[in-house]
Amino acid sequence: VFDKTGTLTLEQPQVMAVHSWHGFAQDAVLALAAAAEQRQNHPLARAIIAAAQESELALPAVDASRYDVGYGIRAATTEHELHVGSLRYMALADVPIADDVYSHQAAIHAHGGALVYVAVDGRLAGAIELHATLRPEAEQIIAQLKARKLKLYILSGDHQEPTKRLATQLGIDDYMAELLPQEKAEWVQQLQAEGRVVCFVGDGINDAIALKHAHTSISLRGASTAATDTAQIVLTDESLIQLDEVFTLAQRFHNNMRNNYITTFGPGLLCLGGIYFFNLKILSSMIWYNASLVAGLGNALWPALNRTDHPPSAHTAHIISRSTLQA
Image 1 (tube, rainbow, N blue to C red):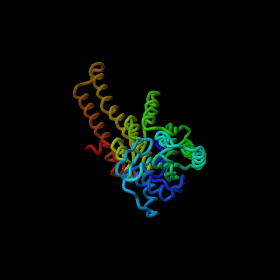
Image 2 (image 1 turned 90 degrees about the vertical axis):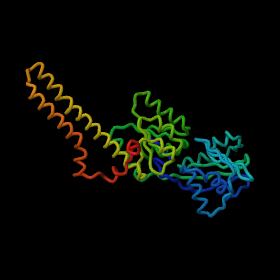
Image 3 (image 1 turned 180 degrees about the horizontal axis):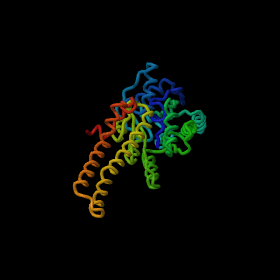
Image 4 (image 1 turned 120 degrees about the vertical axis):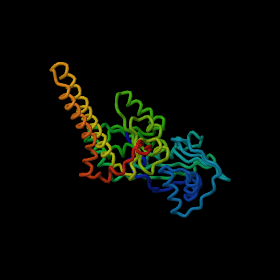
């Protein structure tokens, strides 16, 4: 199960346009949004702040701010009260929304864009249009995971049309959009209730609850602290290409453990059976049993011995598990 923004797309989207209403200047809309977001670390916030810096805009000082997970951020300057986030957040803040705003949003979404709205003192001042870029390795890793016969899902807090567009591009049939963080976690739990083993891959603070509930949770370096602190596995080169290597390592470990059971317990049971039913001599059984222990030890050490002949790939070298960090 994948998050969309920052996971299947590049970490930071691009600000393509700034739309303004009610007499607000575009630069003012961007500056106010950047001021509200300057303490945040999620991809949309970084993109807005970067755009303001590129335009060399002066940001007003923010006296206080509060991030409402899944909706947006509320901030106060010396002169204004700001709400920055989704259109749903504007509605919750009782900001009047004209009908043409909805049609404008639909047109942007149809082209794969997203809008972050800015309200100033209860009036809709404008919106910032952002477009995400698909990670260059995304199509390759999705094809590799499909070859493993895995069922793939996208759970996104983004709007329906951009999520659908990305899912279609990647060939993923199952996707859900406009989900709050708790709703993502509920979807993970629903899949688990159906008997599925769920691996969740996400990078944002909105993904932390879903990461916590998944059987296996994976994040990337540079993700939010909430995501990397929760994830069991962190891919430290910020690339999804390591995902296939994670499954390969897991399969090798599973095979090694299975062989350990066979080489260690199998001969022991045969020795006991031989002693009781076939009059196998004690010395012979001890030799046979100790030989099985040596075989089990050799099997356990085989990955390390094999590693000398075949050094780990660059991808493997940059996978850090929670157990490694704890050690």
